[in-house]
Image (cartoon, rainbow, N blue to C red):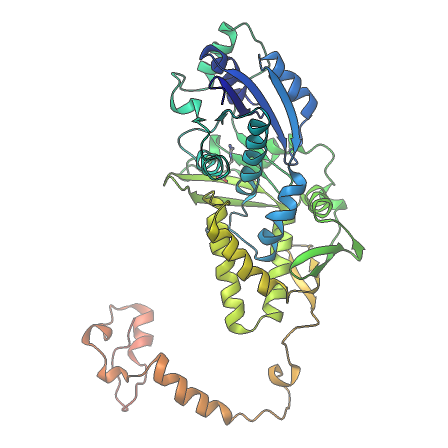
Length: 432
Ligand code: ARG
């Protein structure tokens, strides 16, 4: 391997732009890779920029198909989230960006792998885990961990000292990361949860990036999604490939009042951060698949499916993509997703909800659920309660450990609790 050749995941932003001349200063020959994951950027212009900043070569690689074949079907089919409300956009793309970088390094006969992520966040972990899995012998360099620069002003000053000019602003309120699945917005007034947040101001700022979006009052009020084995295949009856469906839903609804999630997240490094994620497609598809899963899966399987979604989401968030545990979770997930075929009609007039779910494998039985007259034998439930009580409760409160019978502390709730009737006929303070 040539020790002075390196392959940089180049985004066109200030950080990776400053990295190019800095690497040259350190004696490297820089090969930039621009990976298209559906960000709304003019990729050719960014390639020219990498060359202008001194890269020896700059190539554009398209990872959309790989990402949409491999990970996105599970992100949808398991309604995968991190901590319940982050729908994973950035985390879904990173392994595929790293894979293109490794491929480029292999074409060059081996190289040092370089990324522009800082030492604070998740992205450094995602990149470096992927490099270690895919190219274990290749050196890794993360300039933010070794160079003397501390912020944007330093980087702009450095670029000026190198004689390369661009339109980077010294202060930039927000940090964006975009791909076909989402747009993330972090930094500025979003950062500190103690600061009162004006979400409209943030969204207004972000809407600059949304030229061409469908106006709020023009967006459809209903949308019907057809699923085949856990994967969305139709929108309003029209067969639509997954990337096109995500693109269409995001474009149509990105100005909708419900299109974003405000998330306070615990990064893998432990640092807390708050951000806005604009991801209407992900939100709608998660809502629809969850409604379908509730109708189709039995009680235990539904419970397991939700846990798989949480585990898969956490694994993706932490960058553990190229791992045995990811394959195991996908195998388990696939076996339940196979049942998730049907159509979900979403009503989007206010807060979106699933208005109608048609599922050939649905387990709903009118004769069981109805409040109307039916043949259901209500006395069966007696035996059910007698036997399940043994394992779920198993002991009268009068025999329970002392600390279970806490003294009421006053107020309305404890007044109510104090009159709870217990087996044996006495009235004792209830557990709280
Ligand atoms: N907090 C999100 C995540 O860890 C988004 C990160 C966005 N990255 C960025 N470089 N702005 O997935």
